[in-house]
Length: 481
Ligand code: CU
Ligand code: ZN
Image (cartoon, rainbow, N blue to C red; front, side):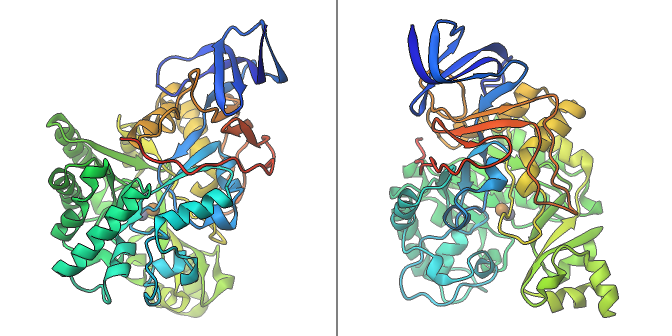
């Protein structure tokens, strides 16, 4: 007879590879999967009858802004209640490091994500050390943000970086990668980086190659310029010689609906030509970011997620606020600044086409600290499993799980994660495939999903199905290329 700490019996084992599921048992000892299959002659201190339930690798949220949340709300209930066991941070150009001493106030919108510059870290070594001292309930990896690098090296952002500023950013990125950052992200859409030409990104990004780092981008334009932006992203990937990943891919505004057929064909052609490319998406036709008054009129609907000037407006439709104030939409938006918003600007067919693309990983892009967040912060993974895989038959459950586990682990070089296999880390999710369902809505976004029965990270249970256990077994993971 063999012994383990935990055995889940008779589960539908969905191993994260995308292959067909099998019914069997799974045993955990310490932080690893000890055995799988028929474990009738095994015993454990905790044995769970998982008949009728799906057991999968822990979900890896490929696109996160939980850099600060890991420290401020380390249980990260919005994520663990969805089955997330690993988050990928430092996206869209924004990371908490490096922020060398003596830099001035943070530029917007970085200042909205990081309310006090004292919350930044001089380098990734300091950030990761803090995360190891005060662990969260999830594992994390982190990209180094290009906007953060610009803040570290430049005194104004309305122009391209000079040669010496680029040299400074290259040196800082090199150190960040040495210290364990997984790559570089850009937010070329956002003001502190819009003036950065393609060449600036390439020159800095060339540092990535020697470290096996990734290039991950919130592209310059996801609306009228989306095709040009994909072209730019592919060029940056080619000229730096590293994998290029398009973040939260979408085509915004009615005149651009349908263009995902073109952008995905471009990605396919690049891949066929030997280029390493990837993308992620969240399962909603509305996005969420900062409130930009000049962009509110293009959206079908805008919901305010937070406002520093008028906090009481969080959760309300901008059109209602504008009517109450007797102002136009852009004027009302200006009154609320700085503020965040949800924008309804995408098309369901584009969303489905993107979700089904073979390279698409699931990433929430959730902003968990927002007072009235986009429901993706709480509902992304259950929505893909319940709504899109089960109810809409967009893809088989095994494929849905692959897009949030094995595919993402391989993309980010996370060894022994994202799969169920003896010897792999015991990051696990147990859920009922018949009932899993996202309950977070645009009206009431802070609600945990139903149908989850348990979540384990490194062999320790973080979520019971109803509540956090309080355990914080998360680790800082390094990318292995
Ligand atoms: Cu993002
Ligand atoms: Zn973004």
